[in-house]
Image 1 (cartoon, one colour):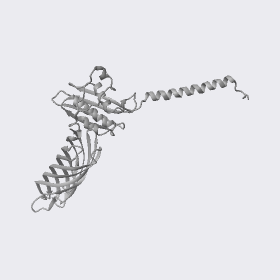
Image 2 (cartoon, one colour):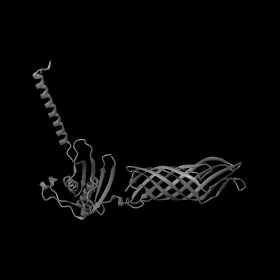
Image 3 (spheres, one colour):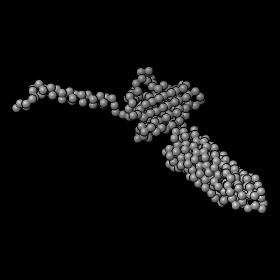
Image 4 (cartoon, helix red, strand yellow):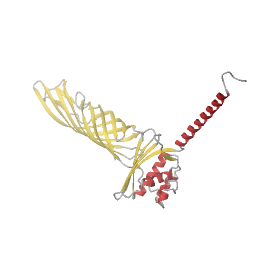
Length: 349
């Protein structure tokens, strides 16, 4: 049956066009399959100072432990590893920054008797980061020393390898204390008839990660003041200077960038006040001691820590401030009060 308007040449051209479309589709699928081979893509930056293996050897050791890893193609999403090694001292050190697909970064530091040991330890860490489900006996093999390539050809071919491992006794970066310096703004309701506001600067030391508590110890200096306040005993103004020793035994959760702390502290310093009543005026300074506790919400962004605190304090000294012996009491420290603080600090190891 002949269809009006459709010639045999038209039918032949349509068949060729369909075949061409099928061929183009198959080519695109094959090209995509070729452009994105199986495996987990990764990018590696490697810097070494001193007598250390080169980047080819480092890549070979990574592939020895994580065969599923492959170099990233073009701009495809990939794991990122930045390694920097230094063997110019008696102890070789290596720093590894791991960047996950969602952009989060984890920094690890390794120390060892030689740069070869550090390189193979970092290769093991990368392998575990790429595939946490690997058998645990891979870590047990970490006591073996890395074998150098037998020939330049072997070094160029990452597929020719034997399982390599290295001592990792110091490879856990969480086994070290970290430190911080910073400052912030705070208020305290116990140092004057109206809340006092001031500045603080301090130093903190946090326990190693992986411990049951990951506690924190801190020492800070605080200076606060309260403006002239009218009381039944006259106009009063106060200046407070104290040192605060802080202990925070609990961090929860331990390994997330946003966490809570429960803390206790001891204050020691002095409270100076000036009271004016009628024609009388008296300036006085008294020792100050206080005990307290607070809760802290902390957010760690890289090496910067943002902190928000709120709690209570109980002064241990309750000296009176008045303009004269016969004047009414202008201020006496209460039995308890509240405090708050907002601060940031720089963290380092």
